[in-house]
Structures are given as structure tokens and as C-alpha cells.
Length: 421
Ligand code: GDP
Image 1 (cartoon, protein in one colour):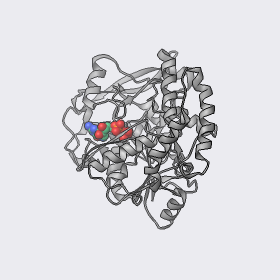
Image 2: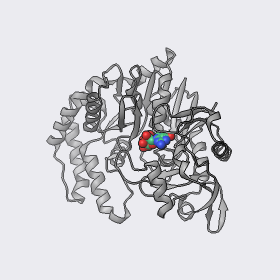
Image 3: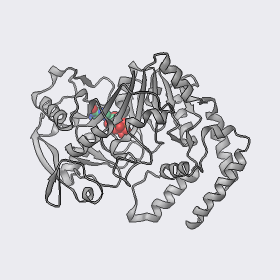
Image 4: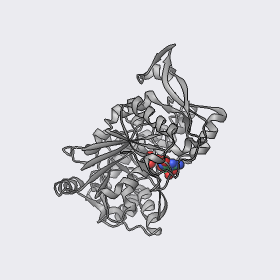
């Protein structure tokens, strides 16, 4: 069984929470893209954990966790994350953590470049998380980056020095400069700690699949942040969609058996870019507070809105989701009426197709209100426990986006869910 767990929206749908829940049935959890620019928050009996780079399966004793070649890894950040988890008693050894030798290293100068550029852009900024992700992916595709395997290369110092010389051409434009020997010291310090985990991930995964192991692919960020299908240029710098999972894992021949799209009962978005369903004022503030919508990696308040039928339907199609995990339904308990963005209006014309480019920037939300359930659903554990209005809301979403809700999350903790079928 090869399952992808992916986000349908702008990210922060609760993917980490779903991977943590469903992880029990899987032997291997694979992260296939992205870096430490977002965070998964997982709460279980061992405590509260924020994971930026490590796959969420790391919190389960018998799960093997894989970081694929599609990822970009800030070595210092990863060492810190491992240390923080170990302090809480989580076992992390080369047996349960495998880092692809092909994963790209995110250097301190990538982070610095990200900051310099965001500062230069000032009011026109993209809302980057300033973790260096855009610059490091750009360097990857210019073939001017280092991979984990390069940590042991005999010519590492020379390659790094060439890269730094090249990078300094860009940095000069910002009035900044990188020192190659500092960078080498950084690579050695943190690289040495991580080397025991670096291995041939494609070989490991190929064998694991042959041996009948159950493999789960864990996405970071949602469909709308995909570099190709998302709201470019307000996207992430890598493909976030399920179809990329086997590639970012390093084994394109792996065939997904199912894709579970994680989707929130309302909408949120961190950072800049078109977010048509956005609500403002008291209505937004109430929802933000009810949902605790503040970024896991940055603490930034998230933009919020009602469930967006147009964007969600598009996200479900982009992901090829067979089933949905609907999260945070409990957050809507306080509402007498549930706001839903049922269509967009572009230049006075109503549409339910997700628009591109300028049309998307101009789109205005068409809101309707559905009856709220207006009671606490956080203790519901079976379909029968749910009030009729909640079931109606779920049925509405299923019909609107064209996929069935298999899991319903009604709270942040592992067991706060209902299996719908
Ligand atoms: P991810 O990046 O997609 O994993 O999402 P985040 O971790 O950024 O955001 C999800 C947040 O919502 C976390 O703080 C979770 O603990 C929390 N969460 C997930 N599912 C639920 C739910 O059903 N109800 C509530 N109240 N919180 C949830």
C-alpha cells in the first residue's frame, strides 16, 4: 500500500496531524519535497511537537522515516530538531531516519539571500518565510548546489569555494559578502552529525516496497502552493502534489494506491497572494481565534475565510484525491451559520472554475450561509454522534468538491476523529 497524504488548499490543513494518526498502519513515512519553511504540529500522548523537516512518523516507535531527494535540508535546523525531539525521549537513529544522499543542502547563505531579497522588496514582498527555500531551489536547478552525498566528497572545499565565489557576485548587489571558510566550518560541524543517516534512499524504498511494506508519503504545503499548479508566483518552490511524491522520494516507478487530501472545514492562508475567500474584521478575528490560526513555523497570524468551494475543487483535482480528511470541524461549533464561498465573481461574471493570473487577482467571493450545528462536536467519535447539521455540511462539501470524506477530525489530539466509512 502506497498512500500520499497531501494538502488541498494553501497549507496548514492539518496534514501532520493526519499523518500522525494514520501512520500507525504504515511502516515507512516519506517526506518528498520542501524544507523547513513550514511546520507540522502534532499533539499526542508524548507531548506537543513542531516538525519542520522530520517526517511525522518519527514520533512512532516502529516507523522508518525517509527524507527524499526532492527535499532541501538546512543541516543546522535539522540537527536542532533532532536534539529537541531526543530531549523529549524520541529515539532517532539511522534505523528509523534515512536521509537521501541526493537531498539538497540549504546553506546559511540561502537563508541570508532570502532575507536580503525580502527586505529589498519591502512592500512588494512575497511573504517568504526567510528560510532560504526559494534561493536553494533556484540554485538546485542552476546545478549550483550541494547534495548530502557531497559532504564526504574529497573536493568539497574546492566546490564550495567555487559556489561561494559565484554567489558573491549576487551578494555584492546587496552590499553583502559570504566567507567560504565559515561555510565550510558550518558544513563540517552539522554535516558530520547527520552523515550516519545519509544513505541510498531509492534502494531502500525499492526494497521496502518489494518486501510489501506500507509506505506513506507526507506532503508539506497544499496544492495551491505547488510551483506548477498553484498560485504562482505566490507558491512554494517545489511540487507539493501527490503525483510528485514518488519522484521526490527518488523512485518514480512507485505507484500510489491512494491519495488522501487533507482539507480544512474553512480556509486559511499564510503570507501574500490571492486568497479570494478571505474574511476581514470581527468575523475573521473570531474564526482565527477559534481555530488558533497562527503559523507553526513563524507564529504569523494566518489569513482566514469560509470554506472555498472553487479553490477546494481545484485542489482536489490537482491532487487526484480519492478521499478526504476533513479537519477542524470543531472550530466551527460557535457559528450559528457557516459561511461558504460557493463561487467567484470576475468582472461581474460568476464562475466556479478556479481562475488564473489577473482574473484570480480580481476575483471576488460569492458567499452563502449554511445552517451551523452550533454545538460541541469535539467529543464525537462515530458518525452517529454527529448532529444532522454537521452531517449536512459534510455532505455539502463532498458534493461540491467531488470526493468523499473518509476521516473527520474534531480536535488536535490523535484520537479526536471520526472514521466516516
Ligand atoms: P499542517 O502543516 O498541514 O500539518 O498543519 P499545521 O500543523 O500548521 O496546522 C494544523 C493545526 O491545527 C495544528 O495546530 C493542529 O494541532 C491543529 N489541528 C489539526 N486538526 C485539528 C482539528 O480537527 N481540530 C482542532 N481544533 N485543531 C486541529
